Amino acid sequence: MKPFVILLIFLVYTALLFLVTWLTARRATNRAFYIGNKESPWFVVAYGMIGASLSGVTFMSIPGWVGDTQFSYMMVVFGYLIGYFVIATVLLPLYYKLNLTSIYSYLEKRFGFWSYKTGAFYFLLSRTVGASFRMFLVVNVLQIFVFDAWGIPFIVTTSIFILLILLYTFKGGIKTIIWTDTVQTTFMLLALIVSIYLIMKHMNLDFGSLIKTVADSDYSRMIFQDWNDRRNFVKQFLSGIFIAIAMTGLDQEMMQKNLSCRSLKEAQKNMFSFSFSVVFINLIFLTLGASLYLYATYKGISLPVRSDDLFPTIAIHHLGPVAGLVFVIGLISAAYPSADGALTSLTTSFSIDFLGLPGNNRLTEKQKEKVRYMVHFCFALLLLLVIVVFRAINDRAVIDKLFTIAGYTYGPLLGLFAFGLFTRYSVRDRWVPWIALASPVICYVLSTHSVEWFSGYKFGFELLILNGLITFGGLLLVNRGKNSA
Image (cartoon, rainbow, N blue to C red; front, side):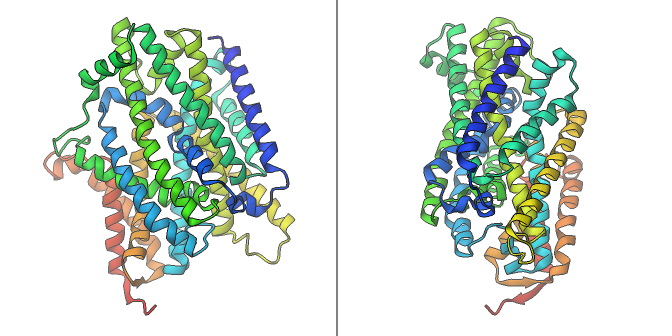
């Protein structure tokens, strides 16, 4: 596929998003930016969250990851179901009861100023890194297949992409994203289905035959019993529970969409329907991954050095122009949710949690809006910087690196919220930042030396659980006894 065609697809799709933005952002207020005036239909939120949760990482990284981990990731996904149930029945009722806009303000109500700022800081760190990793995947493909051919530097490509996102989220915020996510989810799922169909066609298989071929292959192995293996099914399942709780339930971006629903009941409907959809769709993505590897073997295609490049390489160079077109549309539709929601939630969290913008009575609404615009722009620049740095150091499947880093950055949040919800102790608030800093450092040391210290044991995604437990234990050490309330 010629670079000009890919660029044209990108521009047409972007124009569609700007049309949706224009329709949804007219007369948007600060309240609409933060929580969509609490008018978002739950089924629209649920459908759009599929694209937001999957993003470019799922679209490209999970299919390629099958070569290293087979279907073991499904045990993580099954764990998600339990995690989403906890979110719907424990966290959402709490957030709605306290009428929160930023979920981290709960920590101030429960523990105090420093706990609140610590939780908000770890979200900003987690979401900045996570969103940058997701955006990198997509921008890197556009760079390789479009802009390299024209001699345009990677930093320019990234700047263009972030500028477009900045422009269409600038005013409407979460109100706009709720609706653009539905467009993006639709195109991504269509690309997934069409891609599988084209592989079937090129391998002369019908759907049933393809499923049997995948099931009979080594790629479909889901259960790994070796306790020392990072893919051990028990560790994967337990990790999935806490990954869902931390990266969805304790994440401002994902919860901001739930909090824009009209009521708690509607937000819970959203979470339950979303959770089962995610399980089914992840299974299809893994099937696509196995199909890509089987197709490569069938055609004698050399595998790329980086597993993330498998899908784009086969779609664009080996399956014909229709597959290339479909892949590019799917990739672009998976790209925007990686960035727009992140940029909006980062702006929301910083504006509320660090600037106290909504409750600042010394500023007019117009002045608050100007400050919010400035915060929005600064976070766009920060994302640009992190993406450029990440490109220079990346050497693994992005989803692997994403979950590994999430274990370090979301762990303190997990420990803080768990301590707040499941104990009645208050804490020495000024000690909390130090505990939250020490916990990831301890986890890093343990992970680095686990093979020699623990008889060959290798930490996987369960590092998140350990991090949360260490934070929880540290809070116990600095507790001040039970609250009287």
